[in-house]
Image (cartoon, rainbow, N blue to C red):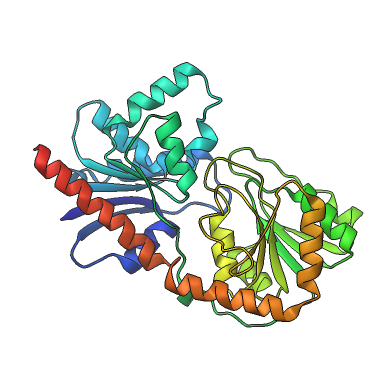
Length: 339
């Protein structure tokens, strides 16, 4: 079977490392800057696809990692220029077009996505969202995964709490909880690529115990994560997948994580075993759990070891790619039966 994969460099490498030899794969890979916009990603993906027309014609199934990478394929299918099996991995469409959008916009989306064979989502809630809001019945949940070999736990408990990430974070709640506890913290964050919010610009002047770092390189982010005591992810409530990369990276590093109970995290955490949930809008709930964990290092290590184990056994890249390839096989068999 011949597959054409369209993805940014980071996601393309995940497939490249783990894809089965049963498949003949051509990868359309492009590099994104640390801070990128939606038009930048769309243009880069579209240009790369247009440069790969020969491979596009020869492919049995196309995998696009993100809606933006899938746009060129959707347009080709709409214009009747080709008819290919298309598995799209949806990362953030509900952030851009959701149930609050106009009826005209939703009608247009429903028309455009008809040509997709299957959609893979990194949260069960997001797969259900595709069915309920977009009327797309072939959306399936695929657990996200990271490569355990890229993350080496130190089993070291530092003297600061760590938090990071750029989208859907309630940093106001985090800062308030840390301020009440009096603990040291480091927050490594970036500007949201869709909303461009820049929420922490004045925090460090107000709370000297909280060190704020903006747009840090990935290697520094991992180093700060490794040397922390534990991790807090104050995710905002959402109806779509968000926060899994930061969550699973921390778990892979053997860190105990206190994380908001949201639609995007309930698929990955077993409460008080592989992580700790807190109520996403309750600062006192976060503060109490943070203070308890800080004062109980044996609990930090227990949860961290459990977290690392579940990454090795379940939430890893190989399992993620294998699950997506099962969908690809199903997609190919449906295309063959209908031809």
